[in-house]
Length: 489
Image 1: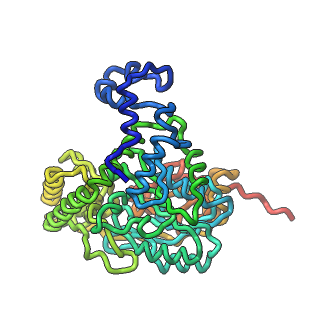
Image 2: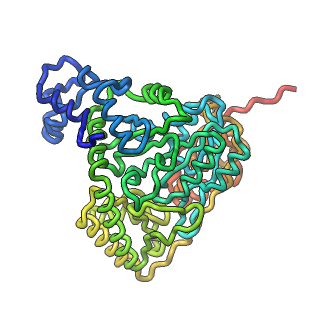
Image 3: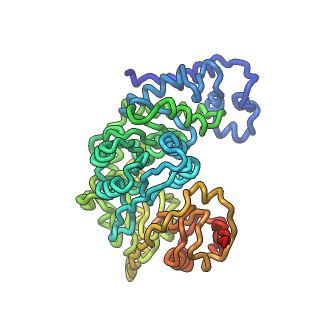
């Protein structure tokens, strides 16, 4: 296929050049009705292609023209049989994957360290999650992926599962042996879904981990916007035919997608595909080299450590993406949160994320040697300010065992509830989410039975000031639980 083509973007440009008189939405009509300051900042070119699904521009909900052509080119670029554009981000693509294969009551095997969109999809579908604990890194205080052995144990216990979901790569860039997991799961004739939110570049360079499509996975939700150059909120859902129905996928993703689809987002997907298909190897190579340079320099800075290939070698760390620059800052006596704020205040530098013991910086095709040198300079300043006399924070990342699931998450989420004091909630069924950072794994999900260990763990983290997310009462004084009826004698 000719990847120099951009069917959708070219059609949008032609339409704008014809300058038709518009009596349709959006009401700003090429920017004429926009706020003047916003129009001047954004520019007339962008506003001229902020259009809707009129006939010349095709319709994302039932593509038969330029959007269909653009999606076929994307499928070719990503090694898929079908590719669907998402203007609802990768979250929309993940929800589509799960709702395509799961009906109410169906089991789905998922890692415990899932993105919240996966739990949202499980609630929407009425599915019953079977959780696998991810491998935990005792040296860094982070979680990796799930292993082949853990997937095998789950499948042996739940051979009636409708799907297995794998995160590849993790937020920190770590991969298990995806091909081995896919082959194992397919031996049970069960589809494999992949959360590939942080893996768009792995399709385009042999030094990066294997992609979901290359490994033979059935569906993969891939964030083009995170690392591949498209606009925020634009992603793709890549599909291999055989175990999943592409017509049902189109139906589900259409149900979840606004009818006012953003052609700016769609055009950015079309053009990013062109850039990745033609230049992907070179731009990935540049990002890899910059990241490796940054890693070497950071590891020379007192008190800092940036893991590399030495982390590989066991089942959970089969491969990694070096463009994810994870920096362990515990030996400076700081938390990752404190480090993030310090870098912002002193160097005007923003990082991707922080936890108790680490910060994560993404090196992408948008970086240059200047931006990487700025990062290194900032980290040298951080070390100079805190390393001398610093006492390393104790590394403790323990979480209670996965609680008993007594109701499906959907039944709990929509069930009759009451609010009770959290410290007195042991034995009750929770109806909301509680995540504690670190490590970011859900401690309690709707439908699970609250244990005293859960309560003690969460209260300990609240008292030391760590972020707790999910419950309606952010102070965690009270929690929403399922109403229990008295027994009838």
